[in-house]
Structure formats: C-alpha cells, structure tokens
Length: 249
Image 1: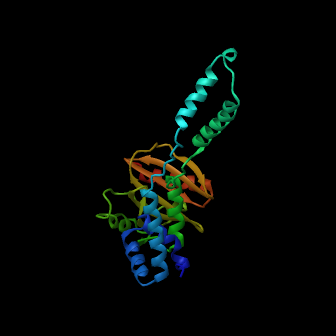
Image 2: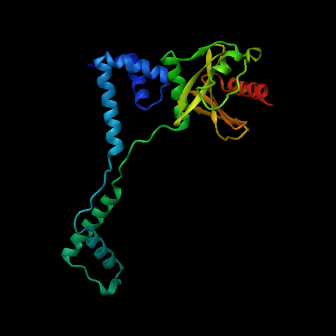
Image 3: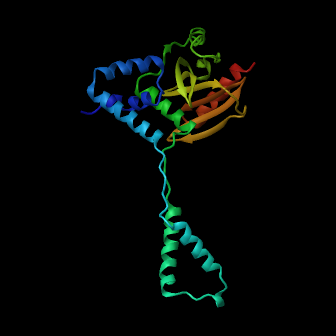
C-alpha cells in the first residue's frame, strides 16, 4: 500500500522536522488513520536512523601496509643496485593496484540541502500543501502581533500594495534548524515569500538563482531577510528595495 500522492512531500518534511506545529499535528492525525502513509513515514524514519547510525569503514587487507612499504623501499633503491626478480615483478603491480583501490574507496554519505535549497523547498511546500498563510490578511497591524509569543523576535511588517506588492498574510516556518517568520506578498500572479530570522547578513542585497526561483538576501537591524519567488528577478529586487525603504528606521 502506497502513501497518498498529496502527502508524499509532506511526510519527508514531517520526518525532517520542517513542518510547523499545527500542520505537523494535522499530518500525524492523518497518518494514524492511513496505513499507506504510516508505512511510508516509518520507512523514511528507518532510513534516516540507519544513515545516522552508520559508520562505514574500509578494512585494509592483511599485510597491505608491509607490501606498500616494501614496494616504496624497492622503488627508492638506486637503479644500478636493484634487480627485480620475477616474483617481485608480479608483486609490485599488484601492490600498487591494491593501494590505488584502497585510496579510491570513498563512502558517500548523504548531505542535507543547503540553506538556499531549503528556502526553495519551503517556497514550493507552501504552495503545494496549500499552507501559504497561518494568518491571512493585508492588515499589517493584525499580522505583526500574530507572531508575538510564537517566535522570540519581532519581524517588521509592512503592506507594499502601493508599490505593487500587496501583503497577503504571514505564517511560521522552520529553516536551517531555526524557526522563521514568513511574510507573504504577491506580484501579479506570483507569490513572494519573505523569510526572516535573527542573524547577521550584509546590508547590500545579493541575488541568486536556484531551480527556476530568484532569491534575494540582505540584513538589517539584527535580522536576516530572504525573499524567494518565481517572479522576474528585477521585480524581486524591486520588492527588496521597497521593503527596505519602508522598514528603514
């Protein structure tokens, strides 16, 4: 029995602790009544635990060190004083091959996604899971106090409708092992997620492209800001300038 098609991505997010408390509880409730999703979640967690507990090592064959040292010593001998027997001529290539094979053993352990990758995943997840906002309103005086008590910082909230970026609402998110505030804006038919958390970043905005999305990062007032959208990069940069101007001072 397979997991529900609309829950596959969310099950991975739940196993990684990336869902907010409300949606995590809702999904866990669904899992309790769905054998397919329960089996899928158990499998995901089992793989994660196996990878975390695995310490793969390569055990060198017995005598390999002695053979390597002997081969190196033989190679270092002056050519006139060295004559290689038929047995040595056979052993040396095998020794070098064994050394090359031992050095070529690389254990590739999975690495978590980069911060930029997490931001894109959060953008996609917010749209696919229909979890764009926890508080849906364009009234900044409602959105800003909604975060009080849910996070340990106060994100600046503005409505940029006059500049072409109306505020849609806000939600809680989780990025790079920390809670983050997410403010949601629109630019025509495009959604802009603005992720905010305490930290240090350059005040000069930087633009990146990742998986078809544009990301703009900057810092101000002890906070880090990441704006993510599939809108035109110039439009996202315009959003950054408008937000920075409205919140400066």
